[in-house]
Amino acid sequence: MQEFLKVGLETDNQQGWVSYRWLNPATDQVERKESFVMKVSFNSEDMVVGAGIYTRE
Image 1 (tube, rainbow, N blue to C red):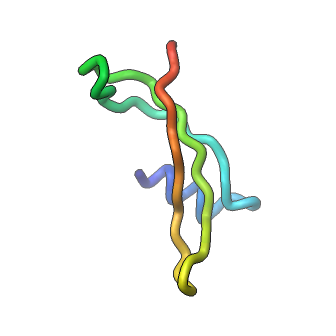
Image 2: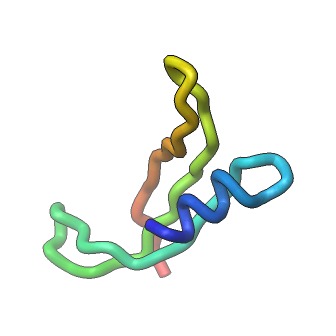
């Protein structure tokens, strides 16, 4: 999760892809996952949101 915040808050365009390994509930295996994260503002608060997909290695 620290990498999400780093990409969303510290990169020039405040968005980007993050690669990591996470438990896939469909297979019950730890697999590679790619997520796109970006900084957004809502009700005057900054936050980082993202969505990810499991990828084959």
